[in-house]
Image 1 (cartoon, helix red, strand yellow):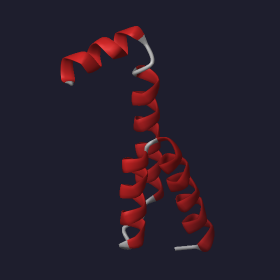
Image 2 (cartoon, rainbow, N blue to C red):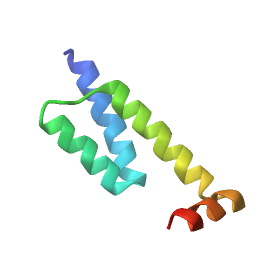
Image 3 (cartoon, rainbow, N blue to C red):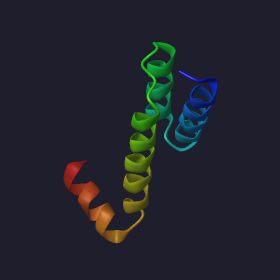
Length: 68
């Protein structure tokens, strides 16, 4: 895998780590074990961002009350 791909994957992992610590740590552990994937990181970032954005809405908070 080219170095540029490793760097971009780690940069996205660091961005996820900044706003969702457990998810970011999990992605860094996968990268350390040699299972890093740029597409997995990008999808995880999108899902985490969507969940965090939705949780800021009134409807999202009601949905979270149902689950937690």
